[in-house]
Image (cartoon, rainbow, N blue to C red; front, side, top):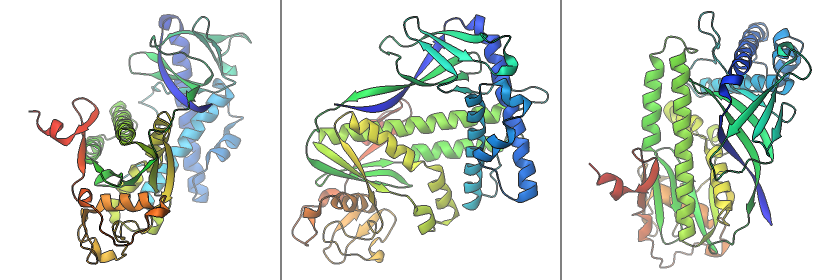
Length: 417
């Protein structure tokens, strides 16, 4: 039996010279539709005080001339992206960031940049035998019913492109490339063991992992340094839609995504090595509404895509036969992972937890991870007995190494000049 999952493969276009002009026309059309929808959002906002969602935008603009420059599903994807960008901006404002700007126009003077064009099931046809993908044009850009863009693509030798679900034409700044999203089967693997690991996600320490007699700590310093750098550089851009601003946004998102992938992969590998068959992750749904972390803390929580990270962790774990469960983490930061005593004052500092009842001294995030682990192990009810819990105070620290893009033990990263 196999699980279903998706993979995105980046493909070069072998006949780039022949198809570039047609792809340029679609990329420019996508920017024009974005700008029209952006102007529409402004007008609706001024009249009603609300930002339209993607459903309203689709209904409002489906008869617009520019809508028909692209395949209908490609136009819908542009409007969905804009609506999502507005939702993200509004959430940041609600969390106290008065400096964040709404999504801008895609225009440089009289020039439109080349925007990414998404082709869903009705917008492409895949020929796996000849490594070709046929992309649809919108009605306005067709010379006839049989006018389309035929791209010959190349991928890495070990990649098999099949069961294609979606294709994106992406302008890299120098050329077009295809991002091909495929539905793939992942063979079931036997679980490495029956042990359980708990994961506490946070701000200063991105993840703390407790296995019952061992703990791992993944600091979020590299991610926070990137955020600080890109926010500072972004503030220097006078125009939010400038090439420099958009390039910074893309680079920041790429680096963040890579960090998530590197940490989730390392956690799964380390758990498999410890015979873990189940990973319990603290579910942070509603945490922004339930807890006031201050303006800076709230912004960090909004910016860090915990849900996105958990999904990455889940599909990587599935490949190793490890299941991932979400666990309500309310109260896990206040309870003692050794005796179960609950007292909010026992977390004496952000990084230190001291239990006055049993004398436990622990890293606060590791203590939270242990409590999350115990929530899926009812037989581990805390009874205050004699337990060796020194590991909770001295977790192994694993750092993201920017020089290699991988996660490694702290001593290996620190020892390099």
